[in-house]
Image 1 (tube, rainbow, N blue to C red):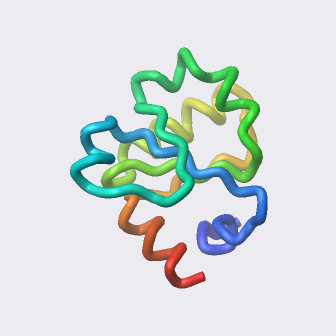
Image 2: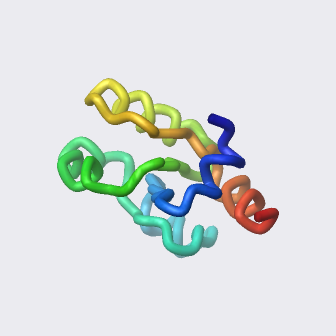
Image 3: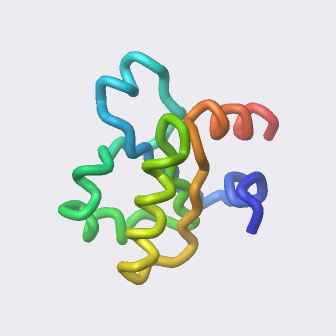
Length: 95
């Protein structure tokens, strides 16, 4: 599914894998859950409970790509790389 369609889903969850300092300094995606990339493995059980689809993003899309791969390797489905937080915000503004 294309990311612009995924973000329209009423049950979508946005997962921000940046560090807290980046969120403070760069801005946020309204309603996103912040779990820094380094914490994802230890918080996997929590992430598994998030409603789907799950859109993961970071500053540029590199970390989120790695997290999406990790989550899929752990058996999660409906997990998508949203790229950078600016791109996610732009997509949300268009909808």
